[in-house]
Image (cartoon, rainbow, N blue to C red; front, side):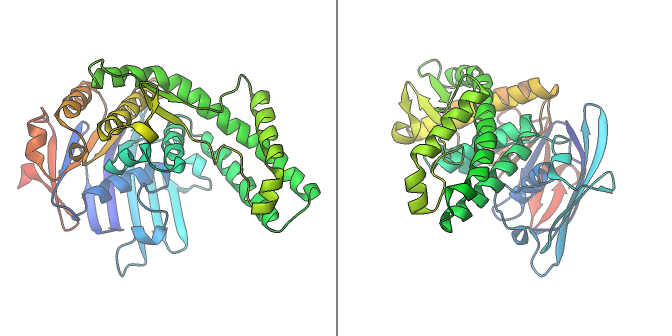
Length: 365
């Protein structure tokens, strides 16, 4: 995968940026609040139609502007496509090769970035929703059709919760319960399947990061032998919680409440993990995700690394930069200290300075 050109217009503080990034390493440097992360956010948004920082479209539009736009040329498996995304208070409008896109699923898969942001370290010890989102984003990248299943489940869950709040009887609830069981079982099955595929890569990567001193694991407690077993298990959970659901007015069982288990040496990280173990686990997860995605897609993904050096000590930095230098794909790295990256072997990278929402090529200044 390769991004050949990017344009930002009134996107946060990037009022007018027209950029052709390098096919390998692109280091975007500058002081805080100048627009470095906005560039990574725009790439991620172009690929997934979602920001990794906000759920509000209005936040992405520059102050005193009615709309913003992000556009990019992407080459995947030798095929070049052009994606245009326009944002306004009415929502998002997307075009692929100048033609309107009606469904999000039609755009996913052309660009599959893997993001590493400092905030993700906190997901290890935070609420279960963060760990679910981390897992689901990884699955979306590898299997874009997963999005449609997740959207279907979310719609059924909203409707079922509404009926529960209104005190609807079981006759009205039953069709939504059946739909929830079917789509919920599919989500749990795909999560379990992805974890089974990722686990050996993650375990080996963590072993390397810890120099063989610790062993990590990633597990999904709801794992079942087959789709029908997932459906039966979810049906039992809903039946057991029926009285409590009617009393509280919400669905108490399902993949929206599951919690993937991150552990080291048999101890659950959310309860017992040190800060170093949290960083190592997220680093191992992302590294494993990159390897799995390349295997599934047939080419390396685009990597978005937002101020990664601030979260890693020297041992973890050495591991990760050695890993990066062995990769074939395109990499975007933000930093406040470009000199530290040159010291990590990134002399061959192209360096771009961001200042007040404008991008400057170091080689031309």
